[in-house]
Figure 1 (tube, rainbow, N blue to C red):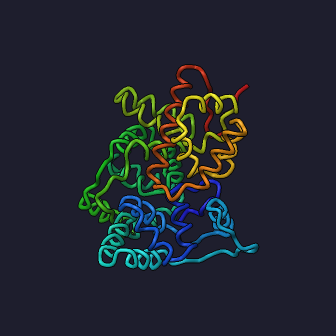
Figure 2: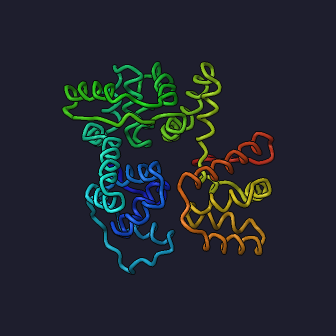
Figure 3: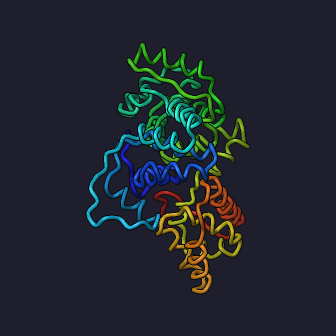
Length: 336
C-alpha cells in the first residue's frame, strides 16, 4: 500500500479517513445522506487504507474543523470490518451488497501484490504483454507507480498503452479473470475486479502526470495525431484544482472575475486550508469575510458536486490561458 501523504490527499481519501476517525456509528448516519456512487468511491478508498499516520489524521480533522488531541498517535484500523459494519448499520441487507461490490471493485490480492514490486520489475514483467492488458493492469495501480512504469515501458508501446487507458470504460470481469489467471502463472497472485469504469481520460491524465513533463508532451502529441479530441480531453484533466496553489495572484484575481460565486463556494468546500486562503487574500476583505461565513454555514456537500465546481473553475482558467490573459503553472515548472 502506498503511504498516505497529508499534502496529496484526494477528496474521497479525506472523506474515507474522516469517517474512519469518527467511528462506524457516525459513518452509518452520513451514508444515509449520500448516493450509492459517492459511497462506493469513499468505500474503495477506505478499503485501500490499512494505516493512518498521525499527521494525516491531524490534517483531516483540522480541515473538518474537528478538534484533534494535542498528542495524536498513529492509528491502525481494520477498514474491511469498519466498512462492512457501518454499511450494514446504515442499509441492512443492501449494505452487505454495497460492501461486496466495493470489495470486488478494489480487487483481491493480484494488484495489491503487484504494487509491492519496484517500477522497473513491473515494466519488465509487462513489456511483452498486449497494450490492452497493460492498460487494465496500470489502472489498478497507484497513479504515481503507474506513471513510473509508463516511463520504463518500451517506447513503441507507451502511447498505445496511454491511448487504451484513456479509452477504457467498463471491463468485463471475465477479461480481468483471464488476466488474473496469467498473473497466477507468472506472478503467483490472484486478482479480480468489478466490471466498472476504471480508466478514461481522467485516469490517463492522472497516470501521465507522474510520468514526467517531457514524456507527457511526447505521448500527448502522438495521441493527438490519432485522436485529437481524446488528447484534448486528457489535457483538460492534467491541471488539478490544487495546482492553483502554484498560480500567481494576478491570475487568481483574473479567474475570480470570471467565475460564479456558487462554483467558488462549492469548490472551496473541498479545498485544503492553504488553497482557501490563497483565494481569500485575492478578494476584497468584505467579499472574503462573506464567503468564509457562507462556507461555515454550509451543510454536507456531495463530493461529485465539489469536483464539478472545481472542474468548472479549471475550464475557465484554461480558457483564460488560451486567450493569453493568464499563465497557469503545474508541478515544478519554472519561468525566467
